[in-house]
Image (cartoon, rainbow, N blue to C red):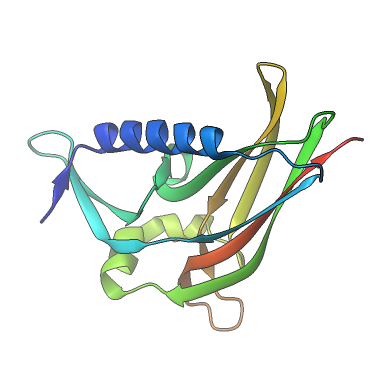
Length: 165
């Protein structure tokens, strides 16, 4: 059983992914940013909060967690947008899913009630030092609409667009 300090892991993940994404964000004359991603899932991790409280979580490299949804894993990305953008949209394309294994299903438990027929994408627009950015999160799990099986997102393209409405 692997034991991780979840708060420490989350802090490091957010710090490194946020710094990397902001530093590697590229400017472009177009309003679209299309990025291909692969999520590297592992077996569930186990975290010991206190001597008597131990909890397991679904895990992929770079995962953050949504406390409002029973700590389901979330993929986060921030991208700089073209100057003049005043809103942003993000869409998931070329999504590839694989079924969750038995151990992951056991860890998921009642959190499955938050899942829909597709991964949930949320996009927020913000200004950072007067620069427009999009902050995107993806809940990379779904209930397959054809068979009801719970699946994890393993690869996808994220189309992030800056808009000038």
